Length: 489
Image (cartoon, rainbow, N blue to C red; front, top):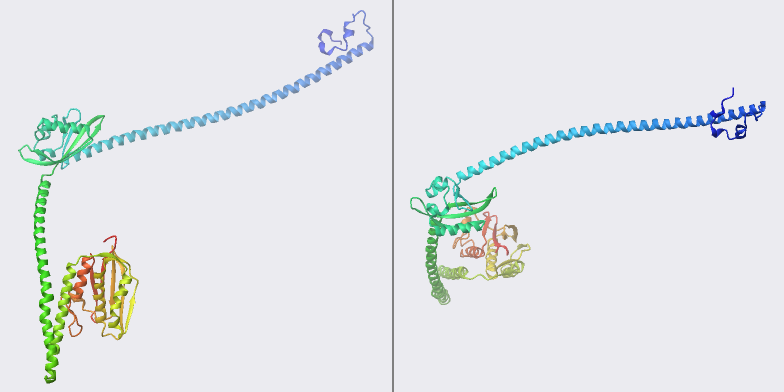
């Protein structure tokens, strides 16, 4: 059955335009034409079918794309929902933390309030129990806004008698002129200190006080705190010390004059010893020599021994006089301190003993010694005395040993020691070693006058050092002396 022509899509009938334009009465209606028309329509139908299929495929593709986009949109929606849920969870956590922070803040504020209250309580207790008077003044009006209880103990006025009154209206501070000047100074300075400010108590007694003021702000209002300490007893003690010092200075002057007079007498005595005592000794020695020379052949051996004893005693007396004079000079001589190389001084000193010790077997051990600041000549006297003792008291040893060195430093001083293996001494008599004329051995055992170690102690003491010894009877001795280091000297 043939479809109406007007239902055919014009875009598909371009081939049959002549046929369509041919009037029906003029067109041949033969079988071939109908077949062609049918083929054409078939082709057109196939073309439309293909186009429809193409559009269907395109529609399917767009549908798939739409479904994919829908899936993606759904996925993004799910993700957005998830993020929203997470955001809501974070918001809940933030709200929780905010609540916790607010709670902590409230707790901190509560603790702060408690701390402030505790601080105020501590201040109040300190204020009320202070053993100094405290006044709090309004910096603008000079009125007392607070006074601690000690003010009553200090000046006799109660707290009520201070409160609300201006500084110059209070009994101890009465006198508008001076008090107003003081207050004006308080207003313009952060801190003021008066020492020995005179005040009067309610009973009319005069007290001297130390007055210290400090300005500070409380709630933007300036206050002045005045601390008032009673120093009457301290001032009285200072006056007493000043009086005693004046008396002491007078006593020192008198004693100095007496000492100078004593020194003059000592010098006169030294002159007398040096000249007046030596002359009789020289006479004794001279006459002994004359007797030995003139009457020697006629004298018995016993008488000759007596003369020898007299001569030796006179010589010892001469040595004793020399040592006493040396001891006296050591106490009066002014120190001439210089930097001294102890190694050089030790070599110089040991040279004095070469003749005395050349026939003896002595093992000398001399360690390096540090430099010191001393009076060289006086220190040489110390070394001579100590080395002389070591040489003397090792005289009975077949093999003597003398060691000189520097002991481990004490605080701020250099310590020198001289050790020997000689006769030593009984430790219980160590206190007698450095006394004048004190001897721990008899003259028959070891000669000497007992002045040497006393001279050593006096010289070392004058240098600000110390001297001491350790020893064992018949087991040797070690003598130590110290010299302050150059920085400490």
